Structures are given as structure tokens and as C-alpha cells.
Image (cartoon, rainbow, N blue to C red; front, side, top):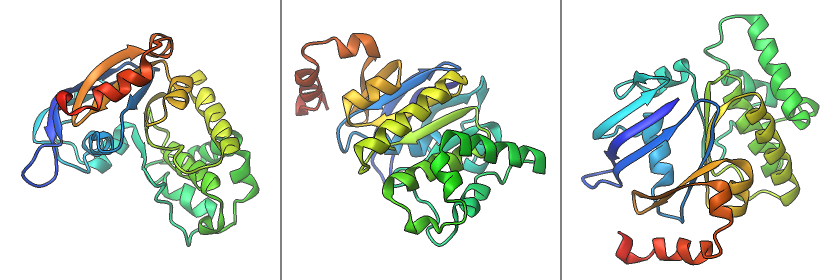
Length: 240
């Protein structure tokens, strides 16, 4: 579904991403792990063309999309849930969701997507007319995920969706991700917390200082007794 080959890029004259290579198969749930400053959000920006990459190739659904702009990637079926939610606070829940459906062609399809999102997140259905900025942080995160799903994507990129939300809401969002997996949606989850990431996905990449330094299936990763020491050692200056 998504393949990055020797992807490099960054802000200003320096590369933050260095020869990134990842492959995500259709229907797969993959985690991208790493500490603060690892380059995870920069990679999300490169994958969605909000940060032009300087070198390397990006393929989506078998097509070379290296030069496709961000709105073109959305039209092809790639959707991002950005870090920090970035909802439109003055707008209602319905208005935020409708903005995520701009590429849909018919009213029937639009209503189907509303039903899908409201079934996944019943709280949003209860708050259709509420101003988004008056919602709790967890509810806003549900709205951000729902907005991305309104475009009927083939693949979802989630950038730190569990950051700063209550444990109960974390459980609700994890349950929603399990339902999305059951429905066959492909997704890449950026996360710092290992336990959450390993529950939500089946395979993981670990990123440190712009490099992919480890790839593993989640069961193997979770069974490593040295996982915390490994995580720390990968973050050490020697690995730069």
C-alpha cells in the first residue's frame, strides 16, 4: 500500500530524514516508534507531501507519487490525522466532519460516511451541533480521526493520537482502531508509548535521529526482556 525508498528531506539546508525505507502492506497496521526529536512527524509530513522530500521515491498503491501534492494524495486515498488534532474550533462537529469529505462526489456517499463515523464514535453523534472547541481533548481527537475517515481513505496516518488524553478515551480510540483493522483499513501509527503501540499494531519500525534503526513484529518486540534498555541504547549518540 505504501512504500518509501531511500527517502531523505528536512527543513532548511539539513536533512532530518536520512535514507528512510519502510513498506506497509495493504490491510496492515504498523507502528512508527521513537523518542521526541526522532523525526517521526517530519516523516509524516514527507509522506503526505506537506514537506517536499529531496531524494528518494514514494509509492502509494503501486504508483509512484513522489511528485504528487498533498491534496492529490488525499484524492488517491491517503489521509492524515495530524499531531495536535488541528480541528477547527469555532466550527461544529458536523462542519468539521464535512470538511474531511470534500473529495466525495455524492450526497449518498456523504451520508454513508457520517453514519460510519458516528457508529465508530457515538460521542460525536451525540454532539453533532456542539462547537468543536468546547469539547474535551479526547473528544477532539475522536473528531480529528473521524474527519480523516470522512474522505473514505485506503490508508490512514495517525500522528500521536493518544497524546494528552485520558486513559478511558485511550481505550475507546484503541477499540475504534481495532474495528478499523477488522474492516481492512491500512494504517501507520506514530507513537512514543510502547504498550499502546504494541496493542494497536502488528509490526513496528523504530526511528532514531532520522534513521530507521529497527524493524520487528509486535509480538517479538513485546517479548524482549531488554526492550526498555534497547530503546535507550538506540537513542544514544553512538547511533546517530
